[in-house]
Amino acid sequence: MSRLAGYLGLLVGLGILLSGCDQEPMTNQPKFETYEAAPRWPDNQSARQPVAGTVPRDAPVELTVSDNLPMPLTRELLERGQAQFNVYCSPCHARTGYGNGMIVQRGFPAPPSFHTDRLRNAPLRHFYDVITDGYGVMYSYADRVPPQDRWAIAAYIQALQLSQYARLDDLTEEQRAQLDQDDPAAAGTATSAEEGHQ
Amino acid sequence: MPQIFPRRANSLVSMALWGGAFGVVILILVAITIGSSAHDTGVFTTPEQPVPFSHEHHVSGLGLDCQYCHTGVEKSDFAGLPPTYTCMTCHSQLWTNAEMLEPVRQSLKRDEPIEWVRVHDLPDFTYFSHRAHVNNGVGCESCHGRVDEMPITSQRKPLTMQWCLSCHRNPEPNLRPSDKITTMGYDPAKDGIPGHELLERYAIRKDNLTECVTCHR
Image (cartoon, rainbow over all chains, first blue to last red):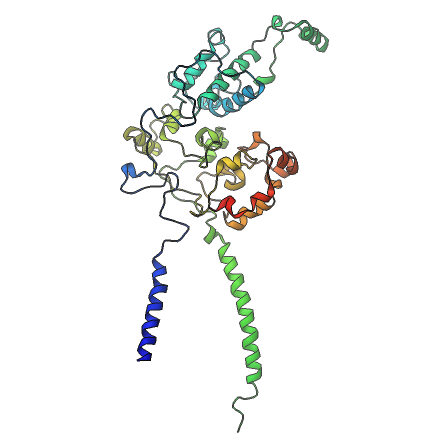
């Protein structure tokens, strides 16, 4: 009798141990990681499409887009604009803004140069709108560049334009004196290329 | 009563004891070796993808920044995989008839995502955040290796806890200034600002980095 009880105990013990064999490893738990496939869900996706018109909870709701820069123009803003311009725009527009970026060199239709009268006189809002809606063969960047960064990029584009089109009249008396002192020969063709380096 | 064991039993017992102890040490060494081997950690795992996307071509050939496609990297825990729309930003004009890109065009047409195969998969009990690393001086290359030299993406780092901790215990040699995060082939030790200065600039508190709850919760 006691021998039978022993065997039964052993059997139950083994059963308990064996039940561990069918466990999913803890490294792969029954939950969805970001973008993990979800069989039986629409499109096999665990990530759902937000309802059309959804805005992030922490995003400022812009009922109307401002015509001017809605934030103070600071060095930080321009630096942010430069960084984002170099990431998202430079592949086609080139870091200089002349529109001969690497993707254009590989056959993409060339965008217009920023350094033309038409775009030099374009309002800041124009660049914001083009980033939002796209233009010609340029796709919309609305899902890649958030509104704050669009303004930063637009502001940087104007800085870029200025870097290729600075007139002697734009300089103060002091700066002009400094320029003459630095390089008397070059006085009169003052262009600051500092920000436009490729 | 005669002797039960012959004389050589003495040496057999001592051999068995020493051999056993030695065997345990060997077993531990073998376990460690297997555990940290490429087979177990997945280093050089190169899954087949629905489209043979080349980071080498797009990053070092064309000079695209990582963020151009992985837009979520500085805002979100997940770096983000580009939607088909991002691919088609260029490929609506370039290589429009390439056989290789047929799944991409079909994906846009049918509004169905491309099912990329995950290359870097951490265990489900670790909570890695791209945002936390990228905004605090850790570059893409530190965990993903030279992506700009990969025609097909593969895992290059072991991604074991020991490997994570080696940096969490001593982050200085891996820190970069914020404008060099996506740069490939950058050597923080040689090219950059000294690690201890960056540690201060990013206000990194080293004592927090090895808390269990930093990665597990």
